[in-house]
Length: 99
Image (cartoon, rainbow, N blue to C red; front, side):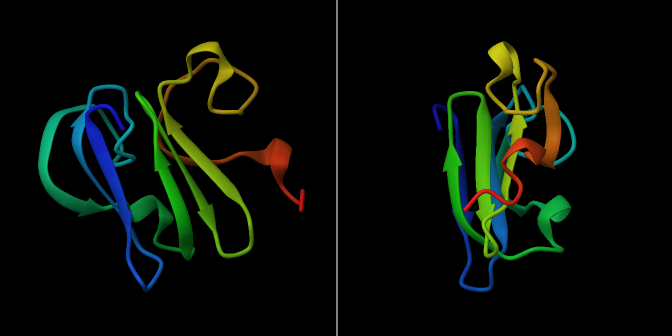
């Protein structure tokens, strides 16, 4: 992302670090700076295989193809049907079951 990073582990864990002023770190709130990678606990129940850090939001896909998004929700970019910010990963229900 512009000011934050994401990394997946071989075990399917997702880690984030950097600036999280809009919740884009997925750690449950806003943060001026996380200087070392922290595991995103909200996704501990699922195996993440892909992740992408946008300017003020983040996306992740698990091993069964479900998409999660979080961060700034302006213009509906998180896919949850509103423009609300999400400080933790949330399943994009509109794409659930889409191959």
